[in-house]
Image 1 (cartoon, helix red, strand yellow):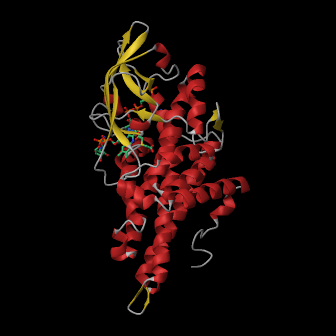
Image 2 (cartoon, protein in one colour):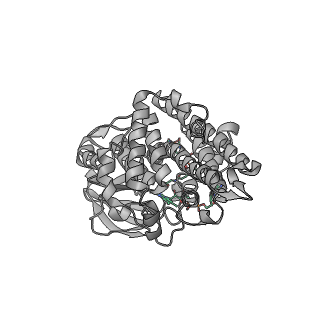
Image 3 (cartoon, helix red, strand yellow):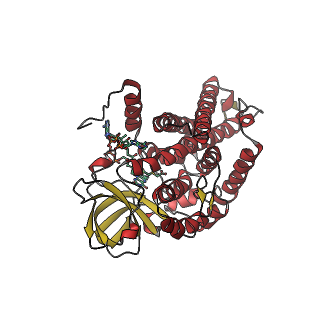
Length: 393
Ligand code: TGC
Ligand code: FAD
């Protein structure tokens, strides 16, 4: 292994000392608290809930939000943290993403002062957990077709419907639920539903072939009665939830490169040790081509993420530009992880090595927060001016 093996173009030189220091802190946490246990957690389909307060203490929950106990770090720092966490496992990055970018973002962007005071400090500390319910059994890529309703009832609201694939719901204290109101226009609004409310049930989805060290649930909303103080006052229409998706999609473009880097490094280490036909397999031209292709794509993907982060920190990032990084980096990361698995031969099929675990996780990552197809169509609409989502688009 040479000096160029880990950062070929010296992209580190594009980071400030503070950014590098934060990255090293998260990397150290992943090495110490996640790496030694992740294979066992993954096999047992176990989410290590005990890490949640530690993630809070590290300042990783709602880390780019300001006020109410949130750390107020930059978008680039958030991205670097996401990259390190996902080098450990996508399940841990997705926890931080759902808690910080989705649930906390919704409260920070659209909540009242009272709502922010009630929920954000505890969520930033990891004492309270939030989830974000947009997707439904029959409304995935097309949230505009959601059927969950919010009916005015005296001073409050009654929610009825179902949500599917909702991260953390069974361990959450509060659910951000998006529902169609009966105000005559059917406008979509967001509600902060304490999960202990009668009629709210979350059931973990089992049998997953990826994202096993994390929790996703079916939610049933059966006459869930909440007060008017549960309504997020600042969000009207789909722009509300979509603005939160922007935050999560941004983090994902960094995270995917973390998984890819970890898979590449596993392949490189193995190729330098493993011998066949009397030589290290790293001495085969075909193996070197695989490793070099990985280096090319990881470095390009990190550059895309870093540039996107700098645009975000400058307040110049447009949602359509986030689709570039989400689509490119996740698609690329899956290809890298699968190629890395081939370098490991049969041993790569086991949980002893990370690449196939990462690839399986990334199947979920490429699906949530907008599938490859949806981000292609968002970019296609931006390039041509023509929506091609089908239906009434
Ligand atoms: P469309 O007509 O395009 O837009 C409706 C309104 O929303 C506005 N808007 C946005 N605002 C902010 N950010 C964005 N990215 C926005 N995209 C659209 C838009 O301007 C419009 O506003 P207004 O005022 O004119 O009404 O909406 P559409 O219904 O045609 O949908 C377009 C499409 C397909 C792009 C959208 O539905 C979509 O993105 N679908 C994908 C769904 C998705 O990503 N779901 C994610 C669920 S959460 C999750 O997966 C968590 S994973 C865990 C983790 O993050 O780790
Ligand atoms: P569908 O929308 O049914 O898509 C099926 C296929 O059809 C896909 O290939 C899709 O790209 C394609 N397709 C759909 N529309 C078009 C089109 N117009 N043109 C071309 N192709 C199209 N949701 C939440 O709200 N909160 C969460 O916390 C959350 N966490 C998740 C965690 C995991 C692990 C997973 C797997 C999902 C999670 N989701 C969450 C849901 C996720 O956002 C949806 O799975 C995703 O939006 C896709 O919806 P769908 O699964 O219903 O697929």
